[in-house]
Structure formats: C-alpha cells, structure tokens
Image 1 (cartoon, rainbow, N blue to C red):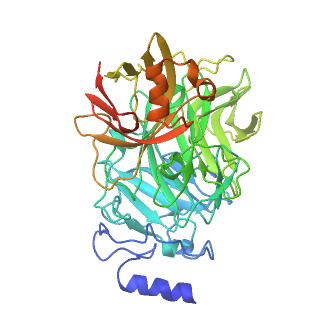
Image 2 (spheres, rainbow, N blue to C red):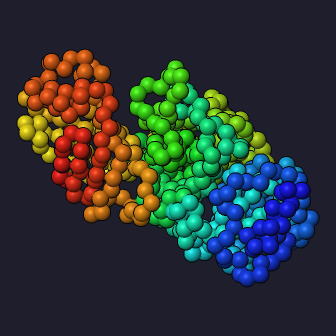
Image 3 (tube, rainbow, N blue to C red):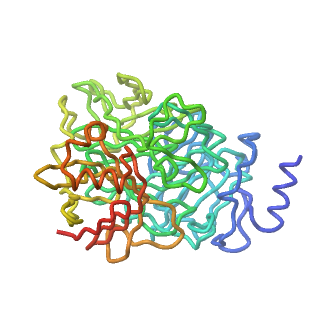
Length: 491
C-alpha cells in the first residue's frame, strides 16, 4: 500500500507516467526517478496486460544483450523501427508494445538495459533513461537528465556517436559487493554506479559517461595491451566489460569510476597490500583485463557478444558469443571464471558479422599506434622521462637517470573526481590526476648502491617509501609531478 501511495504521489506531481498512457506533454520533461533508490520489486506483470500486443515479428527469447534486443533478469526489450517492445524474460513470446514519450516514439536508435535502468539513444545520439526496469511496467518513467550535479544535468550524448555502446549498472540491491585484486569484497555503496560505455571508431578507446559526472566525454577506460587493443565489439554489465577483436581474442575487465580509485570522497583506496587487513581499503591499481579462453577451435563466432549478471558479487557473470557449432546457429557461453565454453542452439539466423576464430593468440596483431605523448625534463643532475603517456592507462614507466645509472619507477595516475567540464584527451587545458609514485622493493633494499643524485631524490622527495602520493597535472605540452618537483616538457 505504501508503494502504491508513493507512486500515486509521484503521478500527481508528474514524475511518473503510467506505461499504458500518454504523457500530458511530449514526455521530454527533465523529471523522472532515475538516480533515486529503486522501488522494492513487486508483481512483475502488473501493467503488462494494459499494453497492446506487438504487431511485429520478434524472437521467442532474447539471448544476447545488444542495442536492438536486450534483457535483465525480469524483462526482455526489443527495438524495431524506433519503437520498443517488452516481454517477460522467462517466457516464450508474449511481446507487448510499449508506450513511449512523444519525443522518443519512432526516434529511438538503440537501447540497453542492466539492473533496474534502461538507456535509450535517439537519432541525435542523446541519452534517455527509463527507471524501475526491474519493476512493474506501471512504474516505468523516462528522463533526459544526465550529468553533474547528482544526475540533474541537462543531458548528454553517446561518445563518438558510436553504435557500439552499452549500459552498465552495478547496484547494492542486485550485486551487493564486488571483489578487488587483493581478494576483498567491498559493498557497492549507498548508490548505484551507472555508466554508458562506448567504443571509438577504431575500437582502441572506450569512453564512459556517468550520470553523476560532468556531461563531457573525458573519462576513459583503456582497452587491453595498454589501450592499443582494437576491439570489434563491447558489452558491459554490472561494471564487467567484455571485448573481442577480429581474431576472436576475448577479454573481460571489472572497472568503473568507483573501482578505478577516483571516488576518494566516499571510498578509501590504497596501493599498499590489503590482503589480510582487518579493515581493508580498496586495493589499487584497479583490476586489469583478464584474457579469457578462446571458443574451441572449429567453433564459429560472430561479433555479437554479451555479458549479464547472474547473482551476487562481481564473479556472478555469464559471457555469451553468437556463433555456430557444426553448422547449427546459437551462442557459446560460460561463467566468467569458468575455463571452458559450452554451446546452446537457438536456430536463429546470425545477426552479427563472423570473426576469424584462430586457435592462437593474435591480440597484438592489430594494435593501435602508441600514445604520442612523451615527456622529459631535468631536476639538478637527474633527468626524467615518461613515454607514451595515456590518460586511460593506470601505470606508466617513469625513468630517472643520473651518474650513468637508470632507475625505473612506476607513475600511477587515476582520473579523479571533478564537477566541471574537461576536454577529452590531452589539450592545452590542464588535466589533473591523483598520482602515486611506486619504487620497486629491490631499489629500496639497495639504496646505497645508487648514485648520490638518485639516492637523494628517493630519500628526500619520496621518503624512501614504496608508494608516495603526488598531484600530477598534464597538458599536451607539459607534465608536472609535484611529489618529485619535476616539470617535464613534451618531446
């Protein structure tokens, strides 16, 4: 009763529009419940019968999450000629025609659902969000709000105008926890982590937009091989991304804004070993890409890939790849941490483009060019060099030289929390990172063997510590590493 009373109040103030009725205006209002706590899931079919049966041909089931067909654990959605259709995920058929705001009806070009939120992109690339996608249809409502502050911004678009994008939601209700590289489980937090991830035209860049962050296209997650791997397809669910290249090399990564180490307002992070800690902080660096086993030799695969959540925790994911087995169409699938693939036949025609499923690893056969941003400078008798700096790559070699010796450190950089618009990539606009200088243990164990200038820098500026926090500011011309007192110029 309380839930229905709340809904009635929201309807009265115009926040909700019932799924079976038209909005009082064109539905392009900035209201809607996206970003608020979800309603407790109730009767999953309440309001479905009020929607008219679909008058177009649709598959009995949806097996892969994409931008034409997608699903969560309760509902499957399909897009045809700008209109949306819905059915129960566990049922065969039973499609109904969704009522859409006038501003979206006939204009939607892509959809993606995860958890309790559905994202739709119109023909201009603008992102809309439908909330309560795990609840009854009568609770569904739309908004174009997106961006800082607190999902109240004026909206945004899909990066690159990409057709290869996906919606991801990591939630305290569905996922509850995620696991860092130290093996510690951390609560998702008081709010969900929602991102649109999008592939660049050459497949080597993954840019994400978060409805709580500035409505720009400045935040990136590196592809495998230090951001040079060229992906043909991308799918993400609950912050687990899944990519494939033209040769069938498959990778997954657990990554989002919070997991990256960027949200220091609400979470504690540490590069120090957190294994066995009584009150562990989130271990940094963030989890890297995991090279998944290939689909068995002889199995055909296409560039339609999909990942979806299957339960509590960040290992509860299933991977799917459209393909054929001995001429039979269907999909290959496995649990995220399983070693081998299985095949399920569907009999549906392949919708994706076939890839070369070579038995050997060909991840490095089609690499994008390395980052062109190389920096060098001098402090006293010490020269410093940083090559191929990439805003999306977490750890970059920092080479110090003096007295005929070379000292190789690691400069960790995390693209931190900001509320103002930042240009994408590196430009004349200063870009600030939360930095950490890491000194190898072997160096600290034998400091006296270093030339005096290097020894003095490690002891004086870094306190002879393994990890030293520092501000790092980078433009397309200079790099400043405050903790080392270094200003490097682009070479």
